Length: 283
Ligand code: SAM
Image (cartoon, rainbow, N blue to C red; front, side):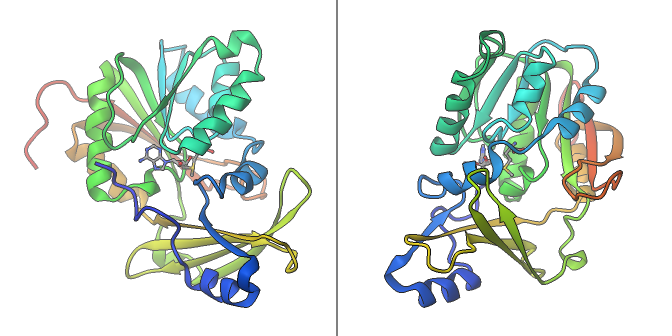
């Protein structure tokens, strides 16, 4: 099972316009594939996940034994977790993203490296030979899966949690199609100093969001256009799905991730679920 949106780069309407205007200089790729990974690393690799990681840590409590992190990316949260002394299994699907993670891990102090296991797998259907006191997934990552994929995720997580184990999800509070502007454009600086344009458009009927990222320099050659389509899944729906999948949702805590740039602005919800013991009640 994949649960992902269609494989290969999505030809967003905006990407179409850009590619038509740059001719042979244009390269289309997905944000998480081989071609897109340079842009991904330039924009995300050093993004600071510490405020979000701290929020998870507060809810997880004392070091709970090994923790499973799903859709770990290049470790925005994993490294702060390792700094806290956690032992982490970081699961991620994309091979280039896993490569980026491994490169970063290779440069980390041995104490951190030794407490991290990297697994390349699909979070909607995975099997890892150990059990965990807690599983965590960062904001934006559940949005990679369709409904069937999310069911697969919940079932796989349930199988991998110790009795009483916790599943913690951070969810963006704005993930409601109707509450989003239909289109927005923003300039983003990369670590390299290169400037990118982020264009986001929302398709309310499909509950999807198209992301297009490209160089601000119109003369760039190659002119790499990275796209990605993600689902907009409201937090309430995720909570209902968790209940049906055999979890008790014991807390929902709004918090400020710091990503909005507005100090103290609570833009995320941390959902804390505990595995119910016994059979899953019939829907
Ligand atoms: N957790 C990281 C962070 O907070 O920076 C990455 C979050 S990013 C929004 C979503 C990640 O999910 C990407 O790294 C992507 O490759 C990964 N991903 C997408 N579909 C996946 C799947 N089915 N299984 C595992 N990882 C997946």
